[in-house]
View 1: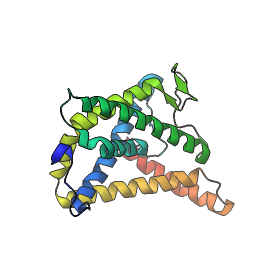
View 2: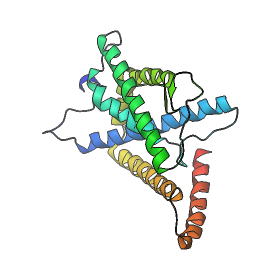
View 3: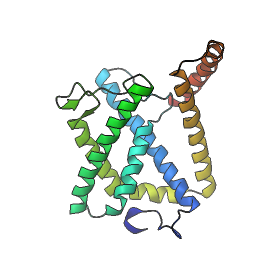
View 4: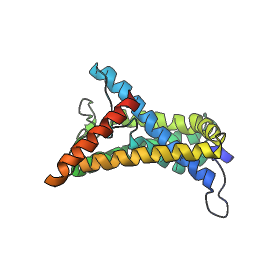
Length: 213
């Protein structure tokens, strides 16, 4: 397990267990992001907040950001007091900021809504990115790459194969259906479909509320 990576590629390809672990890591990052944002915004707003544009307890941008950083900087994982840590910090800060800017722009164009607003911070760009947020992402990504990821990988590796398959299948189904309902809900629906969608989506929201508490 060199430098925190699960396995070396076999004949240039990832094996099935490695792929399952990557999916589990993605979903974990999504959920950690949701927990972090929900707690942070609940404290700021002084009322319970369910963050994210989906109904469930996950925010996909954290999953994508985490995996991008993992695949691009995972091999630099090593001693904390090294030049690699500095490289990981600045590269991850840059990647996370770019991802935020792209995601925020696409959300405005496709969903017609602003997912977050950084205008309360002094140094920001149209509320989509901000210096203080970028500095935080650098710290968070460096902590995951250098400290948490090796432990997470070791933990997931110890899961039975059947458990990995079940977890990935359940999470992929929930997030997939959730994304579908959200996308349809933000589009212009034909009149004959609107009533049916409203009924089904109402049931889905109640189901997800039970999961998120």
